Picture 1 (cartoon, rainbow, N blue to C red):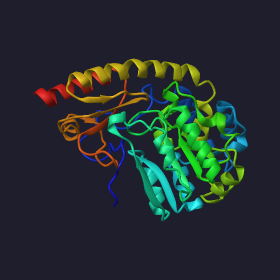
Picture 2 (picture 1 turned 180 degrees about the horizontal axis):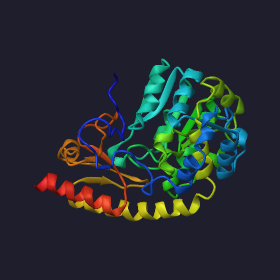
Picture 3 (picture 1 turned 135 degrees about the horizontal axis):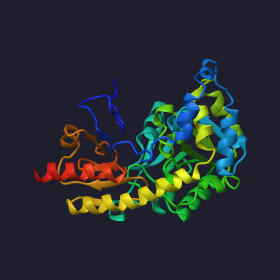
Picture 4 (picture 1 turned 135 degrees about the vertical axis):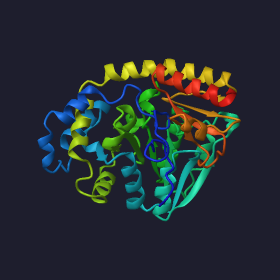
Length: 346
């Protein structure tokens, strides 16, 4: 079996008290979603809507788009793999480090990988130098904003230049915004009418803490692309509970998201200070997780204390000593810092 490369694996090893390895909304799943799942379970005895009609309408209204611009999937990774299996790119450009599924999906489709190394001296920011690597031999470009695991957003001027270059060269650009909802940065969805090359990836996973329901979606004005992707996967790829939960989550999301962003803003700054005081090199967080480098091993000692964090040693461009932790509520964040003090100082 292939080694598991992500956060959230609470099923193997010692029991987990708090999972800091998966970056979900600290408020947990909204009550409206829980109610939608339990109010009438008998409706899930029938097949789900293969067109996800109500869900696409809700997502489109949320983003100010048309339902035809939306293709839901079984999590964002469903869309990542479909893009590669359907488009069959020969060469894929991505940053190092970044989310590992981009590379895995590209390799599975037989693509060659071209990495743009992010510099630690730049705080792992994506700069305009990335755009110089968008060359005519590249077929598919991935950009993640905020990037995973660094938490850095890609500035709008860099994103715009990347989109312009991809449009001019006929290269497909996919921008992953799964964590953007926790920041103040603008979405690329406003550019969809301007760039046929552009597709934007998002999900309910992080925003609404719905990881177990598996619900993501791709947005594009290239409706022919979305149709090809729809035909390139199974008919009922989004379950009835996931569709119902997604529609419920989007009925009135802003009060919930405003509370979450307030917690994340306060707690990310608190965690950063505490980690710095413990001798960690902290990279300024912009999302709902904190990326840092430690001179000491942390993952196993913390796991022995019931706390799961994400080692980033397997990311291209990183190595041993890099970690990522989710921003939780203050009570849980205090548990992490106290456990770290115990690990480091006994």
